[in-house]
Image (cartoon, rainbow, N blue to C red; front, top):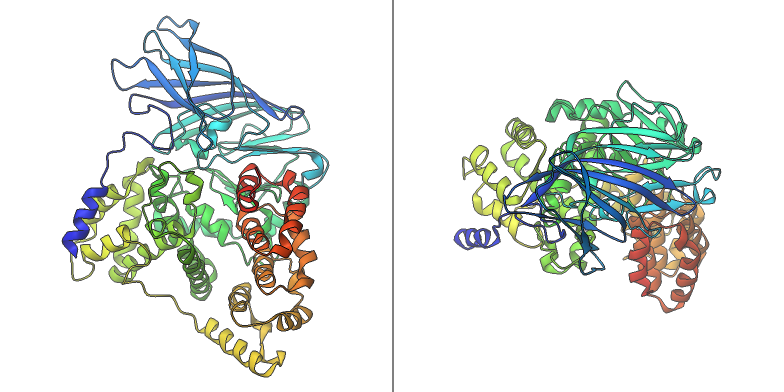
Length: 608
């Protein structure tokens, strides 16, 4: 078995000379520095201006720069000669791909030091969402924000859009004077709204972490190095909800080394934001759906903060290797939550995560349950399943349990320090483990490690986390079903995690009448917690519980987070009696969804 798996590793080994999701020729020429000068036109829903790239040539015969682009209009391209003069360069586009955009090829007479590209974006740019003032939280001013992960930076900047290449950048952004621009960078030069903003990111980052937002934003500090940017409607709520951010930072730095990015601020986006959060360095983008009023969903903040080490500092070199970002981050997140909120809450969150993973494993092809999955020829956004997040976390927890924290914690800290500001792949990580950790096969054998890394599903050494609290919930659920007496459910002491576990068990065990009994007692259809509401709506649709439908429709009109929206449309589309209703609802809701959410729901409802 061990020999077979070692052969499998050798077959999977590769040299990172190209990224299948990038047209760029970064092995021959790269751009370690980038300068942006852009103006935001809300009437045209466009960014226009130029990007200047400092070039680093790696081969003496190279005279062509190939960049990634998507739906960009290129106005002119200039190169800076050795004498310092800017001269016009010829450029052309390659064949268009629905998932990857187009190659932008620029020809050089010599190896110039810089290139400057004048361009404007499309209103349909996949990495930007333009919201009218009616679609913003305050409904007074328009709002725009970017979402560059995984391959969407190319829709608003022509560049080498691959995590295999890192760069630092500076930017000048012009906006209407009543709006504030912020970026995932040093925002300290922009204390007042004046419509002309300057930014600097001195550390080298991958392109998917370049981030911009423009809106009627205000700022409030939470500590000397943390704070919140938000529209007025969310500002005080967010500061109260996320007041433990500084403590989280102290825990993380104690475990994994100094925080390398200066400040850690949060930007609260409108509810159309397609993700829970985005880990843009110095300024995490956050959905308002985690502002529950009771800090029950703040593990998301721990997750985005954890990315400051796993993902932002040490980065997967391609989207095949996403577990190196997300598996490590989920592990670090859970360690932060354990320190700040206690071991029991961390255990409950691990168990709920495993339940989500097991649901995904039932639906995914076996090849997509590997930690390293080949997404060549596919949309890399498909990589964001529970597999890299939770299976990756479980692998690291397996190592922690075998070696103990006195060994594993220093190993992980040293890993982040050794490979800081570098891109990483699994083979490189495996070589580092063999050198620094895997010294005793009686503790962990190479065969056990390779099973986790290169075999589908969960490894044979997986041990499921188990909470006595969830066992008690299961017992109460069984008693209620047996007696019909709601007093059997001792919900006064339940946290959101208990409720999520409870609701997750209902689909297989209850009927519509029992759902009505629960809804009348606990008002679950009206829950203001987005996680609870979504879990409840899933059960309601599965059991055809009609009274929940009006609240479901209102929820889908207000929230654009893909984690919630896409599964609900999937369930609606599976029932003939709901399909037309779902399409009609989507026609109304679609303009308020982000392009990434639109694309996903279009596929679900088979809308061209």
